[in-house]
Figure 1 (tube, rainbow, N blue to C red):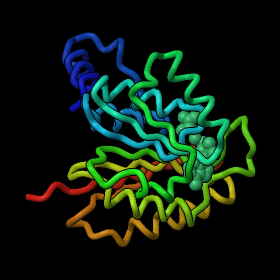
Figure 2: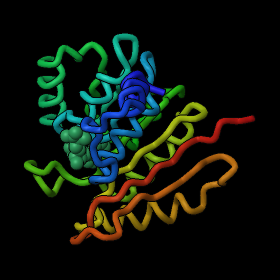
Figure 3: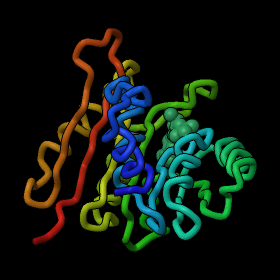
Figure 4: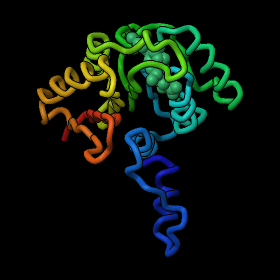
Length: 210
Ligand SMILES: C[S@@+](CC[C@H](N)C(=O)[O-])C[C@H]1O[C@@H](n2cnc3c(N)ncnc32)[C@H](O)[C@@H]1O
């Protein structure tokens, strides 16, 4: 369990709940909680969609000085924005920023990855034409499965409210439903009472061999 998570457990074990927040506000928050639970200092993790660097910087803060975050994006402006953000936060040394598609991830690693996150779609204030696509997303996820260490996890935040996101959701659900349950735990978290196709979270955890 990560340091932040154990601190929070200590906090919530007291009689005072004023620091407590809603765990199920949205899937991005749930994804962040899972990152906090999974990552420990010294771990290697990957942000497959760097964007403006919000997730990359969060992951960098969780793995500490000895950890490493590899982040991918196909847009140079994403790499520039993320580098700037990490420099400001004094976290740049913990990151490797890669201008390449996540479908090429196997060019950069051979394994030992603890966590991979995909925040799919397009940059909210960027070019909406430049978006993740189901074919390359699937290729990347397949490759990430091989790179994960036992107990490692892949988190995919999907936006089914736009056409590409809907296609990615269908493709990923079909793919994960066929994964061998002896090797992977696969789950989909979706809010059933929110309007307008809210984002969903697919999680794939590699089962630890006995
Ligand atoms: C929703 S944004 C990511 C937001 C980001 N995680 C953040 O914290 O700001 C999606 C990003 O995926 C990138 N992207 C699209 N196709 C990609 C691919 N094949 N490989 C890597 N990144 C890709 C886009 O350029 C865009 O920056």
